[in-house]
Length: 261
Image (cartoon, rainbow, N blue to C red; front, side, top):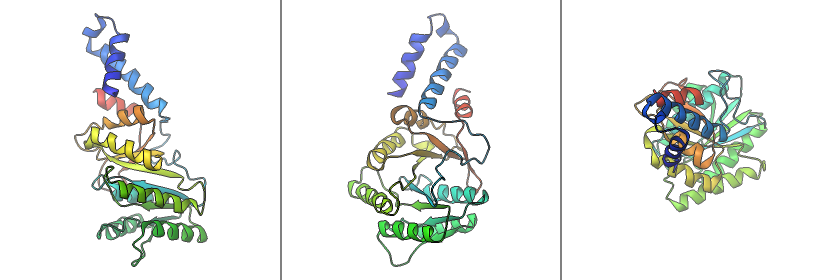
């Protein structure tokens, strides 16, 4: 859909002679890319480590992180926690992935790196209960931010998607506006499949933002344009490596330039 729209734009905007010049085609595409990203309320970051476009107004603010296994969800949570903590926020991470045996341990490694608190009760297997209890604890102890991990699931797994809705519902009992951000983590290498994931998760839990991971590889991350165009969801951050500092705000200008170069 997005590719057809871009091609149509170039056909309509350029004369036959203009179409013979690659620079003219690139310029027309650049304008359309920027128009799509602007419509999705993607704002240029003011600083390298900016969290200013993520909701931190409530205390605690609650961010629910969703996505399929292998997209880089846990590492993104660790990086987000580190970034918020380095800006003076008191951060807690909730180990809501109770399906995967190693998930809690992996999250513990990242929370230690970020030097933030983790809520990971041993005998609680209901992810809704973990999220609720973590939120209650974060509230009572004056945390600024609670980041809730969720089990990786395919967008086609209906029972698990229903469970995700439940996790969101139970948190809203403590604060009807929670979670204040529902962010999907997408792998830049996944292409069209990542767009399908975003569509299904958005339908189920109402996404407020996207983190695109593995942008340090060969992937151009073209899914960014599809998500912005078809779902109008802002791309918040990009993952560019394995280190705890390798998360940066998404810049439309830099992204479009990298695609067209």
